[in-house]
Image (cartoon, rainbow over all chains, first blue to last red; front, side, top):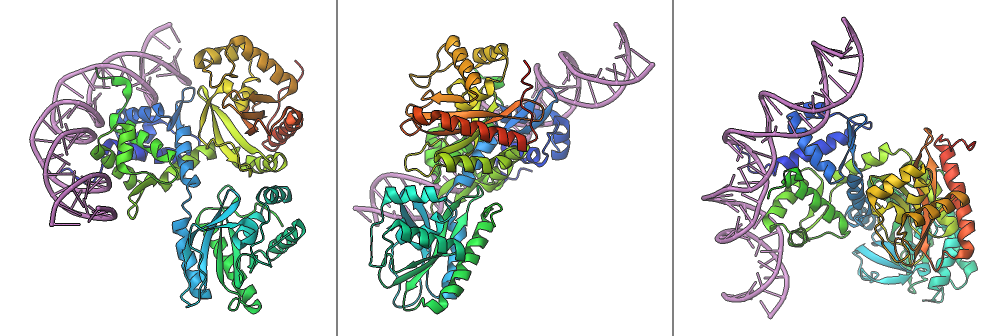
Length: 261
Length: 261
DNA sequence: AAAGGTTTTTCACAATGTGGAAAACACGAG
DNA sequence: CTCGTGTTTTCCACATTGTGAAAAACCTTT
C-alpha cells in the first residue's frame, strides 16, 4: 500500500500546491486548487494556511484568491544569486579546450582582482600554468577586461583608480589612455585580448557571460602560448569564445545587453 | 501543550529548511541544517529528500552539500511576474546605479514589512549587502517611508500601531511624533531618507512609484555608505531618484495623485 | 586497520495529518 | 427581508503518516 520512497506526503502535497499556485498569474481559489491537485478541500486549505504562515503563499481576503508569496520569491532568488555557473560552464569549457586545443578558463571579479575559479587544461606539453583560485589584476587579464568592458566609463575609471595598474610585464597597460583604448577595441570586436600583459609569452582570449539581471557575472577564456595563439588564429578563436559565452549565457537564463546597438 | 494553530508540522519544517538553504550561497550540509533548525538529522534528511524530489532543493553528491533548487526559482519568479513592475524597473535601477555609483533597490510593502525584491549592485568595494527578499520594518526603511508618506495620517497611525516601531539602530524613529515629523519632511522634499535608521553607517534615499490605480505600489532607492552619501550629495541624489521614480511611473502608465488638494 | 566524522536507512510507536461533515460566510434572486 | 447555492473555514474521531533513536553504510584521516 505505502510507497516508502515517496517522501513526506504532506510536504509533497504542499509543494505541488505551490507549483500550481505559480501556474496562474492572477490567483486561484481553494476549491479549484483542490480539484486540480486531487486533494480534499479541507486538506488543501490547511496546507495553504501553513504556506501562508511562512510567507510562501499569500491570500487576498477581498477576492479570496491565493497567490505565490514573497518568501517564495526570496528563496527562489537565492537560486539565481548562487554562483552555480561553474558546473554548467564545464561542458562549454571542455568543448572550447577541444576545438582550440588550449586551456579554457572561467573567472569572476572579486574585489579588485580577477580570480580564476575553474579551468580545463590543454593537453599540449607546454601549457599555461595558472592554478585555479589564482588572482590577477583586472586590467592584466582577458577575462577581467571582458567583464569590465560592459561597465560604464566612470565605473571603469573608478575601479582603475582603486586597483591601480600594476604592470606585470612590459606589455601591461600602463595608462588610463591605454586602458580605454583597449576597452574600445574589446567592445568593438566583442571579445577581449590579453596579449602577454600578464605573463610574457602567454596570450588569452576572453568573453563575458551575462546573468538574468543583465549583468556580466563571469567570463570565460582560452589561454595558451603566444607562439601557438597566433594573430592568424585570433579572430577564429575570438568568435568561438564569443559563441560559447553567448550559449552559456543562454543556458543560465541570462539576458545579454537589453537593446544596445 | 499542542498548538493546533501552528499549521502542518512537517510542511512548516520543510519551509524552514528551505529558508535556511537560501541563507547560504555556497550550500550547506544536512547535519548543520539539522543543528540550526533544531531538527533530528534523519528528519531533516527526509524532508530535504522530499524537497529534492520536487526540485525545490538540489543535492550535490560530490560535495554532499544542499542548495536551493530550480523549482524554487521557477515558483518564486511567479511572484515577480505578478508584480509586473520588476522587469520594467531594471533599466531605471541600472541607470540610477550608474549615475550615483551606489546600489539601487526596488521594494514593496508586504504585510508590515518592506521587502526588497530587486537590486542592482554598486561596484564599489564597500557596498551594502542586503540580499533580495530581505525584510525591514517599514519605518526603518527609506522605501517604506516613501510609500507610507502617500497614505493618510490615520492609515499611517494604524500601520505604526500594528507594526510597532522596533528600533534597529540608535537613529531609528522611536515615537509617533518622530514618525510624523519625518513623514512631513518626506512629503515636503518629495523623497524619503533613511539616515542610518536601519543599519548604522548606511544611508538610503528613496521615492515611490505609482500604479495606474493611483496607489504607491513600490518604491525605488539608492543605498550606500553614509560616508559616501554625504549631506552635500543628498539633494542631487534625491532629485535623481525622484526623476527615476516619476519616469518609471510614467512608463507603467501610472498616475501620480491629483495635486489639487 | 581502526577511529572519528559524516550521510543514509530502518523500524516500532504514537503523534500527526487526514477528509467527511457541519458551520460560517457571501452573494443574488425572488 | 428570506431563502438557495455557491463558496471558505472549522471541527473532530480515526488510522495513516511522520517521527527520531539507533544502527548501517560511507567516507576521510590517522
